[in-house]
Length: 153
Ligand SMILES: Cc1cc2nc3c(=O)[nH]c(=O)nc-3n(C[C@H](O)[C@H](O)[C@H](O)COP(=O)(O)O)c2cc1C
Image (cartoon, rainbow, N blue to C red; front, side):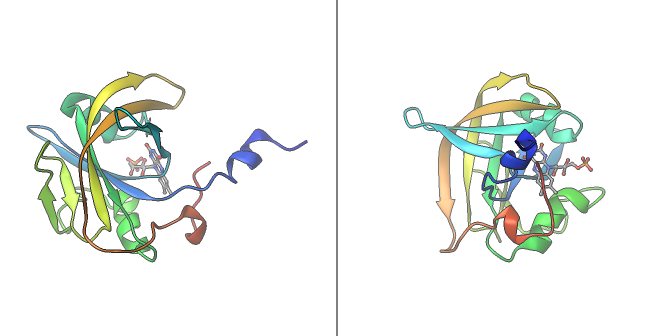
């Protein structure tokens, strides 16, 4: 037998910058626990840690972007968890046309999402959101957590 956590660490995870914008605040964070969870409607589920600003802001805004990090974009991934202050200040961004949430132009592309359900969990809650718009800026593979020095499991 092994600890469940050891098996969980085998689940492949991409890395994303999750962006959120309310009337008064904006925030971006690096997220890895994210999956599609419905074909029709097209839904994604992502786990949002209770302790960071994004947790309240996503519920308030009712929307967010999932910006797909490309292989090798470790510096960009780091912006989403290591930078104090306004993490978006140094990033080339535009607002999502449907929701206003930040789109990171150096990413592979993004999905603009509207929150449809919020499920309380443990130290993370689950945001279920409809994918309403998407753009791919270039070809490439998503940065996999395995190809970084970081773990999140
Ligand atoms: C590799 C990695 C993956 C992460 N995945 C998630 C995630 O799926 N969900 C989440 O809410 N936070 C995740 N985080 C943590 C947030 O990025 C972090 O809590 C957030 O940027 C706020 O920073 P703070 O906790 O220092 O305020 C991850 C962090 C790292 C380094």
